[in-house]
Length: 132
Length: 281
Image (cartoon, rainbow over all chains, first blue to last red; front, side, top):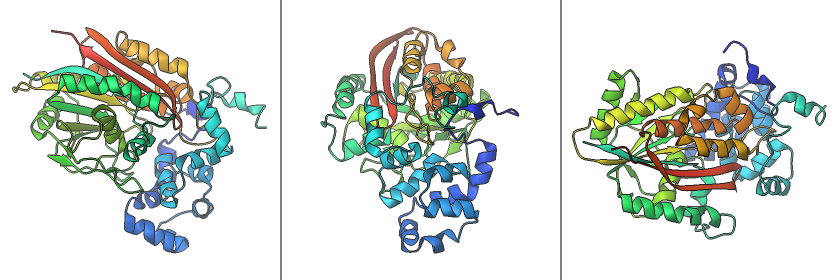
């Protein structure tokens, strides 16, 4: 496990030990949203509710701005961050589209035509030309 | 004695639960899936199992980062339905089979598989979606269910080989249970999918077909797939497929594939389903 050879998978945050340690408080905030009363308290005053968790400024900002990729980058795990989407009433598809940087209709069309193909999407070097 | 007579593999996408709960199963988007499960529903009604062992993963519902058991066996008499952020699914409570579950726990631990024993656990879509697909919308689920929750969220999940060997241990445990019980084991999750990050939406039909073709006759080919290959080729959530190997390990090697379904997409997922009957006598 010492060498993270999976680091060259493009567009993917592997929820490994380092990631999990970094994101513990952020994910536990998300986890708190499985309780109805916590969802209500969060919606009533987001900043106030977030102050109960020991978040970094970048984590706090990612939540307030609903920047789904930034949440993942700062240690979030998608099964936790989707609880925030559920709290907002944001369809998962809209969150997926935002993370993919696509219009929701475009993402849906891509999925209906077989999804994102494995060819050209397995190595960072595949993405270098498209995303310099 | 008790016997595992068949294995059922199926994906467990939450959107499928929404479709069932909101009466959307006839819609064009969903109808290929639900029509494909008509045969499965008839099959399991004919089988009429006494117990289902259901291998699934908890999606930050019962367990959070506070506690991450690799293998957690539900030994309780009943399991509540989890609230995953928008209220609990309107499905019946899941009734367990504590006597068989405890027997499996004891047997597996002495067989050197150190399972976590769980006496209180809410179950989420990972468990309830497969039940809805196989049993429809009954007032009560037709048989007791023993949940086996596997960590596939915190990297690394257990290896494919460990999962397969656990299946073997479960098979030995069930065979040593003194009561006559007909058991069906479900392995759920997969197939290729990724829900997170800029690469979400990746689907690998070639990988999935290889998996469907090999799980019955050549599981050793799938046991050989390492974590990195799942992540890279089948998407970060495609690694859930290791749970199919627990199901497969619990079956003998004389198998008959009685049903197969593969459909892209359901949400961001390639949906796969297989039924394998164990003809070993």
